Length: 218
Image 1 (spheres, rainbow, N blue to C red):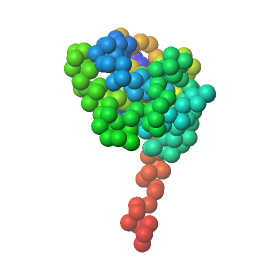
Image 2 (image 1 turned 180 degrees about the vertical axis):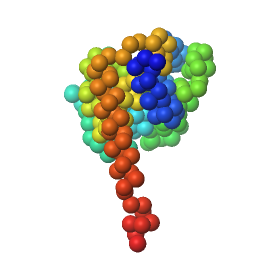
Image 3 (image 1 turned 90 degrees about the vertical axis):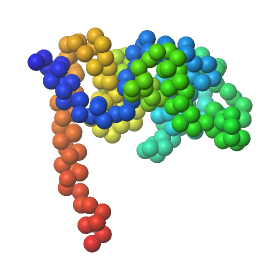
Image 4 (image 1 turned 45 degrees about the vertical axis):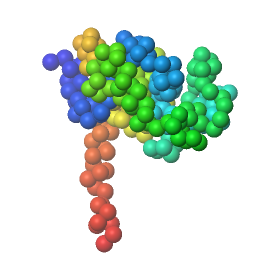
């Protein structure tokens, strides 16, 4: 068995737990063509920035500044600035309060569930495999593309991950996709795998050593 496949087997237990899967270029193109410009816009913003869809739909018009999208991740409470292309900036609405206002509830933004429904509808129209198809897939596509251009560290910083073993879920999300599954493992990837194994073991030790809430309260 090649080192590539050994590494992939190690990552498998983490990847299978994810509800979303990686989308290749053809699938993204099909989804875009099967959606209206308005329906696909939140997904496009996630694709360009790597933001979680929950953070995308909650963006305000005031969050779009000269240097990019200013946001606070709802999951981690971390602040960040994500650059966007001029083409995308031109397509974003600059009126009102919310960047993506709800068409049904006045004064509110669209929900992540609404975007989920949109991508599922587009997937059906486009004939894209629906299993694992979700808005979060855009975050994975962003990570894989950034990894190919700028490397692992750039992805870890852009996604604001504390641990490399979290970032690997995204950077290597394409390993089980088509011809990528048989590509040889690069030396830098092997070094990352070793580091991720050590980090994963370290996290496990910290978790097992951490007292439970019940014991802590005694």
